[in-house]
Structures are given as C-alpha cells and as structure tokens.
Image 1: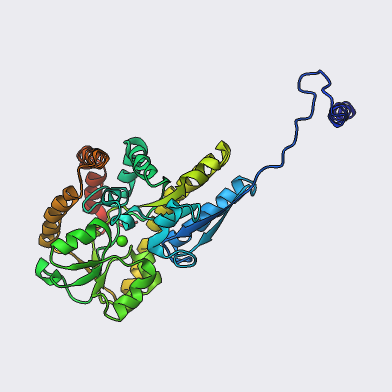
Image 2: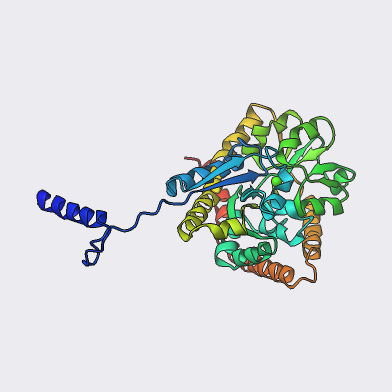
Amino acid sequence: MKIKYLLIISMMVLSGCGGTDSGVPGASTPEIIPAQTYSWRMVTTWPKNLPGMGVAPETIANMVRKMSNGRLDIKVYGAGEIVPALEVFEAVSRGAVQMGHGAAYYWKGKIPIAQFFTAVPFGLTAQEMNGWLFHGGGMELWRELYARYNLVPIAAGNTGVQMAGWFNKEIKSLEDIKGMKMRIPGLGGEVFEKAGGTAVNLPGGEIFTSLQTGVIDATEWVGPYNDLAFGLHQVAKYYYYPGWQEPGPTLEAIVNKEAYDSLPEDLREILRAAVLTVNNDLLAEYTARNNAALRELVNVHGVELRKLPDDVIKELGKISMRVTASIVDEDPLSQKIFKSYTQYRRNVIAYERVSERAYSDARALVEDGNQW
Ligand code: CA
C-alpha cells in the first residue's frame, strides 16, 4: 500500500515538473504562488502593558500572526510611541497606520454620536452591548458611521461595569461635585459638567500625575483591576461605585478602509475573528480579576469604599437622559443610531427585570450567612 501511494505521489510530482498538463483531472501540481505578506502597525490609546486593555492589542496581533501563519504581521505601539493617545482615530483614518485600538467616545469632539458605541450613562451593560451590536443592528450602524471616516470598526473588548471613581472628599449630595475638576470622558463627562463640575478628557497614562499634582481633583478610570495597576489609591482616598457613567463600555479596533480592503478574504476573516475573541475574553478577564483587586485595595491599601447616595444617582440619571438625547443632531444617521439604541435599551430592560436583575436580587436575599 505504502509503495503504491508513493508511486502515485511521484507520478504527480513528475507530471508537475514537466510543466505540461497530464490531461488527468487533478493530476497536475497547482502553481505555487508565494503568499503575500502584510506588515501593519497598530496604534493604541492605552499604555502598552496595562493589564487587560493594554495587553489586548498584543493578543490580537499574536492571534492574527499565528492564524495567518505570519501572512499578516501587526506591530503594536502603545499610547504616545508613534501617535499620541487621542490622535489614534485621525492617524488610522488618514492611513498613516493601518489599525488602532481604543474607544469611540474619545472622538466625541469630532463625532458626538460615536459615544453610543462605547458607553452611555445609565445605558447598556457589557452583555447588552454585545446583544445590540451583534444581534440588534448596532454593528451595521457603527460601520455606516465610520465609513465616512474611511474606517472599519470592530468591537474589541469590554471592561464590564466600571467604578464611579476616585475622590478626595466624600460625595453626599450633588453640591459636593460643584466646582470639582474630574477626569471623566464621554457622555459621563458632559453629565458631570451639567451637574456643576468640570470634565477633563485625559488618556489613562496621564491620570496619576494629574491627580497627584492637583491638575484634577478626582478621576474615574476603569475598575479595581486597572485602577490598582495605576496606583490611584496612592493619590485619592475614597473609591465610589457604581459606574453610572460607564455601565459596560465597548472598546474598538479600527482599521483603515483601504488597508482592510487590500487584504484577501481569509485574512480579513482572521483579523475579525481575533478581534472578536478578544472582545469576549477581555470581559471575562475583568470579571475574574476585579474582585481580587478590590479586596487588595480595601484590605491592603486601606481604601475607603463608598456607594454614591441614591439621591445623587437619581439626579445624575435625570441629567443623563437630557444630555444623551441632546447630542443627536439633524444628521439622519445620528437619529437612526439614537433610535436603535434607545429602543433596544427599553426592550432589553423589560426582560432584564425578570432575568439578570431578578436573579441578582434573588441571590442577594440568600447571600448572607449562606456562603459555600
Ligand atoms: Ca472609565
């Protein structure tokens, strides 16, 4: 059997070497074209080795390299290495680099409605965002919006519900926010301004020093896992929850349209698959790591954990509804995105009441004194 098999192989090879078609279907050796390789650069809005989101771009690049057998090679640059954090969108849009990783709400100065693709105060949670984007029409709208800027977006991670932030004074009423300068990006920042504070949009890498030197009075960043890594507990005393401003922010990978179109279909699919894997895995990582990091912040570093008073939450909620609706302009696409998001939110909350929330309430009832 083995000899017969080898004989067939050598006949096939010989017929191929002759450069003539043997006339037998499937017997000629297919022409071997060396696979084209693509060398890309990905810039990010994150410090390079920040746990979770700072590592995610590397994870994407490594997966793509392996899955494509090296045909698509992406080199990752952290914030400021070749492009400043808040210029990632522009750099990818004009094709200076092929790809970027960040969050859509950083570009609100240019595209206010883009904020819906990251986080809306009192809006969708991480899993609800995934539902809207992938099964509720969200991704199509996002692609339509970014096509105007020569970009292809892919959802690329989620931190889950964040923390309200770090403060050096207690928040007992909305009065305590007045005159306060806080790093708080996106729509949350606009709500904060309407509540009497001043919102600053700083990239992650500048938060610690800004808070330490008094450039800002308070900050939100992500949650315990990332905030501990930045050492924010060294420059603020009170750690407030819940993260009303970012209930489940989606991160984005953006690809320059020409670069994306230049890839053969299999590489486009490999790229998409790698990014979507990270979109899911990042949420899993934050879910697994946040709780241990919070324990360390409280038990080892003596952080004062505080819940925002209900009255403050209610006031912020009222302002949020107004501010969120106010960013919709006369552009039909902007209106379409707002309508799609708000309708989905209404529908998903109706079921969340009898599923996730009802279950959380049920578990809380039996939690005390009933630990395994
Ligand atoms: Ca945040």
